[in-house]
Length: 458
Ligand code: SF4
Ligand code: SF4
Image 1 (cartoon, rainbow, N blue to C red):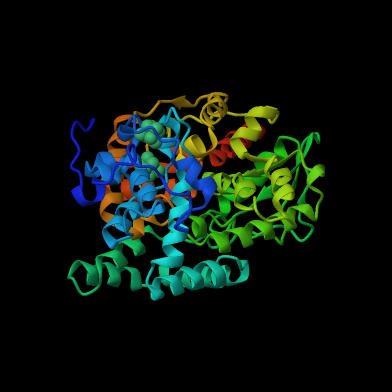
Image 2: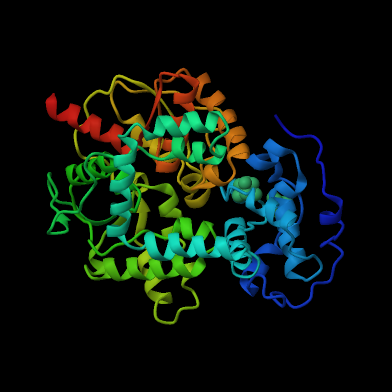
């Protein structure tokens, strides 16, 4: 449904950047000069508005891409103060980047929004929020062993009677609603976490064609271990030696979305070091099965552009990075595929379709599986409301966005929703569960793995 009218916040939109002569960009120290340059490309045409899930959900100009750019520009130019109300409108953004795909002026909205969030975190966020962000993104996510310890604790909790008690207590108003949402959203942790083998290299299981690095992720090894295992099997079955460096870390995507650019940059450096230890030029590709991480990793060159020790190395590293679907579609599947008798639809993860421009490849791969019926979903490129930890931080808007997605998912009549991002799978599976719909969400490589296993049995 297209929004015909906009309810505008007068004090926020009183400033008109079209008639305003800007002072030196970045003068206020809010965003840097190159982020400001990206921002002023906006010509206010409004073509992005109806692609924006939060504008469609709330109908407010300040909750649209154009409105947010307007606000960020006004703060950068010093004509608008950074208030809690303004920050609220920026926090409502999913950073889904659908507006980038729609924008004729090529405004890099994700880059601008992350710069604004970084500035807010540094200069405006209350001390407890800064301390929590620092604890999570500087003391937990960069350390796989600490994450694993938290994972073990969470796994124990999930297998105990406590989750049912938490849900009941929240239903009676004894615990905050947000805690109950967090509890329901938390991924069910696997009995076995994904581990790279001691040698860090898994040899090809068919005629060797390529050497690829694999980014194993931070949450994927804990919550999607079977999908990581399937990714290794699918790559190896298609003639790849798969290198999974032990020293790799979280890619920093969640830190960047939360505005902690320094934590994200330090994780980017650690990952470049980890893969460089195996010789970047030795890799035919560095593949990743999580769309959100892939979009972040493809942006390492921008993130480290001012770092003299890493800028060129980041560019070389990024030139090798491909989503697993992008890589497999480019090199072609050589493993024989057997039948998968299932009707599936496909959800385009925002950070794959809008962040990386990967749209046709997953469909091409699914189209090669015998017996599989593919049904296109209406608005498949629209966000599901997951967006990292957005569904926990903004549960009300996230629920509205998810509801629209579930309508489209259910209308397909498919048995399975395929996606290439853990966040989308968690969010859609939670929504389907709560609606009592007998459909499940699966990662693309899980379906390919199933087809390869069926091919072996034939
Ligand atoms: S990134 Fe997504 S939610 Fe944010 S303004 Fe753009 S379209 Fe809207
Ligand atoms: S489509 Fe691009 S130029 Fe037009 S209003 Fe949106 S961000 Fe600005």
